[in-house]
Each structure stands twice: as structure tokens, then as C-alpha cells.
Amino acid sequence: MAEALAEGGTKSAAPRGGAGPSPGVFEQLGAVADAVLYEGYLLYPYRRSSAKNRVRWQFGVLFPRDWVEADGPVTPGVSGSADSWYQQTECLLRVRQPGSARVRVRVRYLQMQRKQVQEAGHRPVESLRTDDGTVHLTFDEALPRECEVEVPLDELLRGGHTFAVGAAAGEDVETLPEGAGRVVRTRDKVRAETTVTAERLTDDLCRIRVRTTNTAPAPAPRTTRDEALRRALIATHTLLGGDGAEFVSLIDPPAGLEAPVRACRNEFTFPVLGGESGDTGPVLLSAPIILPDHPQVAPESPGDLHDAAEIDEILTLRTMLLTDEEKREARATDPRAAAILDRVDTMPQEVFERLHGAVRSLTPATPAAPADRQSGPVGSPAPATPAPPADRPAWWQEGADDGLSPTSDTVLVDGVPLRGGSRVRLRPRGRGADAQDMFLAGRSAEVAAVFHDVDGSVHLAVTLDDDPAAELNHWYGRFHYFRPDELEPLGPAGPDEPSAPAPAAAPARHTTDSETPAAEAE
Image (cartoon, rainbow, N blue to C red):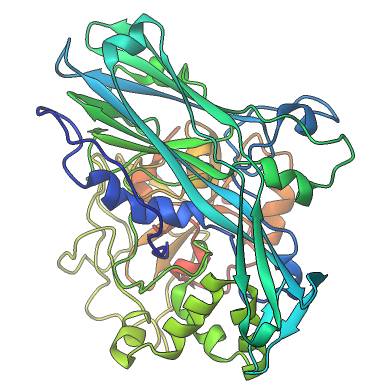
């Protein structure tokens, strides 16, 4: 995830002691939150003329209710890519200091701003070039907004707390040199409110609900989405902090809390723990995009590129290759595009070299394993992955694939050899698992092949038992990939158990991280 440019002030109350967010924790998480705030704000090649920059702001958009429901009620779900009029977060809070615990809530979003270029005489135009060669383009921008409250937990338990999170209308006028014209930036009023409530489940466990609603009057029913965005909250997300209390992971809940976690209803948002790794944490980020617990910004990233799903090095190289004319248009499109170009054009070689790659192994290095290709028993989280035998050629050398057979190789899991045709239950890890794999937890599947990665680790390709397209996916070689410690055998793989037919991708005996969806991404 690329680090976003910090913008806008933050207001964080100092913790009052005990378990709670340490000073600056909200701000440390702010780099990730800013990446959420500006995800998709402006995409490469950062030009107004690019088709992808004509349909913008697809995450966490809260419109006035009557407008968004003109064609029917919205369908609740965790996906923040669906337009809605509200966003609801529910999470669990462990109370460490009864009677003095407090909850901090910070709601953050973008307010749309219309940038209109006007030539002399105040006539609106799409573009204008001044005598010094600077180009000015009409384009929509957005400003970061946020509001924060800190409320005693007891007050939330007694009935809740509601506060306004809207933003005022405004207009800014920038006069261009030599009387060439002006740039007018206008903003409509955004009206919204957030209600925070709490429900006590046990003496030391509460369920917190945060619901943010757009309360602005709806525009006319046939108003275009671009116009309706003027009254919307864009990229809406919430930061929660506990003082004298800690949040519980909803992705990987502690033992005994699975049922209350399942009872939490999150709509148009996906809450994850912030801060350091662990079952509980003092801060929580509820975002309109799916993230893992404890998300982090890659330390190598020199700045935001507004596309957290892309690789910094690739985008940086592509941006370097833009023509001078394309760069002039990008700079005229938006100040953030200009900042990206300035950073790329002046990037020191040592900073660029850091973008080339970093190894963050999921498992520690271990001594060389025996020549057979079966891993040891998998009975504890994150077991060590055997290193390749010392006498085997490196993966890029001729003969490295000799003796590997994805459809007949086996790997031991809890003492059971798994191979093509074995049946398993999926148990994705809470930390480091692909976010999409979490939705497959508990599903049964059939192993199609066992693949050995170039780094010596093992992944098993599986097809879901209840997937109606399983046979077709198997034929095409489209699989889900899991590590051995993420699988639970459903039965021993006997000698007569049928093996799955060879997948279409079988000739590629080795896989890489780019081919393995289960690989961890920062």
C-alpha cells in the first residue's frame, strides 16, 4: 500500500492512562487511512483526458438517501464500492477499566470541490493557457474533512452520542496573471451525522456501533451522479480508539468470542485492527475497502500514488515515461498529480532502487530438508517451511523441475499426506492471509495439485466443493491457493484415492508470488 500525502489537521485527545491508544497511534494509522481516503482519487496516467479519470470516487460514497434509493433500497453488505446513504460499523470492545473507559471516534471523508476555469469576462471554459505557457483545466477536486469526539463508555451504554460531521459550502477565487482569467472553486454544503452507541454483552465486553448517515436534502431524481457527488461524503471511513479498553479482531477472534463476532453487522465498511499485531488492539480502522488486521504502509514507498492495489515501482516507471505533453496535462489536471510528477522527476536513485523489491518472508529460514518433498507435520500456526535440498539446482537452472509432479506430490498435514484428489477444509490464517480467502473459511475443497515455490515453500491448489464452476475452473487451471497450515484434512489420502487430472497450468512446475493469490501483500 502506497503512503498517502498527509493533509488536513488531526485532532486527537490524549489518553487518560491504562489500556488505550498511545499518543500518535491515530496519526501512525493515518498513513494507511490516507491511502484509503485517496484510493482511486486520480489514477495513472493522472490526466483529465484519461477515461478512467472520468468515472471517479467509487469507495465509501454516501449520497442523500432519497437520491440513492430512487431505483430501490440499497442492499447492505461489507462492500464499500456500492453507493449508499449510510455506513455502519459494529465491533467488540473489551473493557479493561470499568467506569472510566472512553471511546474516541474520528470520521474522515472527502468533500467534492468543483474547479471551474474562466477566461476574461468570467466566461466558463474547459481549458486556458496563460502567457507563461501554464495550462489550467476545469476538473473536480476534493478536500479532506474529519470530525472527532471522545465519549465516556458509560454514556454510550446509557443511550449513545450523536454529532455532526458535515462540511460548509464555500467558494475560492484564484486570479490568473495578466488578467487572463480566473479559477473558481466551489463546494456545496455536506450534511451528515454520526451516532455512536454501545451494548453490554458481559461485564467486560461491549458491542460498539458507529453509524454515519448523509442527512442532506436529495437533489432532483434525475440528477446525474457527478452532480449528486457535490452533496456526498466520499471515501468515508472511521477510526476508533479505546481508552481503558481494547478492540477485538473480527477477522481472527479470540477463542470464545466467535459467536458475538458473527453477530456484528458491518454495512458498506470492513473494520480491522490497527497498531501492533495481537488479538486485541487500542485502535480500529473501519474502511470501505477490505484490509487485513494491522495494515501497514510499505516503508520503501516514498509517497502516495492513489492506487493501493498497484506496485509503486511499476507506477513510478510508467510515470517517468509520460511524454512532456502528457505531464503538462497531468500537472494542469490536479495539484496531487503535479505532486506525483514532481516526486518522480526528482526521485534520487537510491530511493528508486528501494522500490525494486523487499523480501518479507512468511516463515523463518530453516536448515535443508531431506530429499523427499514432504513437509513435516503441520500442527501449529505458521510452521517453518523446509528449505530446498542442497543438491537440487536453483529454480532458474536447468533440471530444477526434474522429479516434481504437482498432481502426485504429497505434503503432510497433521500426519495426513495430501495430494491431488484429497479433500480438505479451508482454515485461512488470520494474519497474512489473502483478504478474499477469509471469506472461504470453513468451506470444504478438493486438492488439485501441490506446487513448490521458488523460495522453497509449498502451496496447494484447491477447488471448492460447492462451486458450480469447479469442474470448469479445474479444466482451465483456475484455483484457490493455500499453504499447508491453512488446510484441515477431511480424511486420510489412501493409496487408491483418485488423483485429480492434470491442470492446464501443470507444465509450470514452479510458482511465484504473482501466481499465488495466497501470498502476503503489504
